[in-house]
Image (cartoon, rainbow, N blue to C red):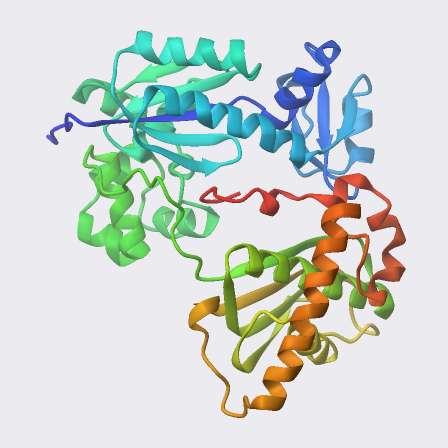
Length: 412
């Protein structure tokens, strides 16, 4: 039998956060079936419990959801508004804990000072009164157990694992995929070994779990057995990669449109690199297709950079190498910066010289003017001409701000 450690960790998770956020500013939506649509207005990325009960799946198309739930109300997502409420939620948790991890836009972990159920209920009530968002809360010896208990308490519930019996109860008959970090691929490997529940995972041989799922799996094994090995992180770890991209809406084999999205995502990537004061040695372009396997290309940049001109040239050079419009329609894409360096400590290229520095200064001056104009007029008011085919994208205010633009959180 494993010993539950004294130090406790809490997990706060908003209930249907995007929908709850919409109900804060549109109170008449309370009690109604509500779906939040993605940036192209076709995909249901979040739904209310009323819509869940009707059987609408997350990620389904709006035209498939309407016949299933004809009384539903659909709204476009607004991450600027969601971030406002997210940071208010974070502030409420910081009122009751000296250590808080901004895990995602609607979740946070915290070091629990008061581990009583009544304390969790007070935080829950304060969150509803001051922010307007219902949350579920779990308190347990580890982050993994705390998240399991908050998930099992939804909606608007609280739970505390404060002894061995409570730990065993939360694991019993719960699918192994309920563990954060165990997705389909890992679940399949575990199932081949007869491990399909959280209880079986926790009772399995530790060395076997490490062999199957590497150290990450072993960490989860310790966590499920009540030993905290995943600390509450008050500061985001350094990036290993930075990526921008996602769906381009309807799959397309229009070269100009796909090129426009590549350029748009490089512009967004440069914004992120500048925000975090980073530069990169490598650039990856990954294209996902409707009817063909994913393909990607990689470029070494011969010196660290965050220059838009160098990055966009590298991305556009890779485009014909990974895609032929005659063979497939592009559906998703990602532009990824790798081998990151602090901007003030960048790796110089072998052929960097005074001419390069002169060009770099010129590009930097142009980028500075562009940034100043966009900060006053609008984020994408001044942009590359290659993005002109994306009039529908830039005309929709929902596309001005995405979830990856919410800085500081550990994940999406």
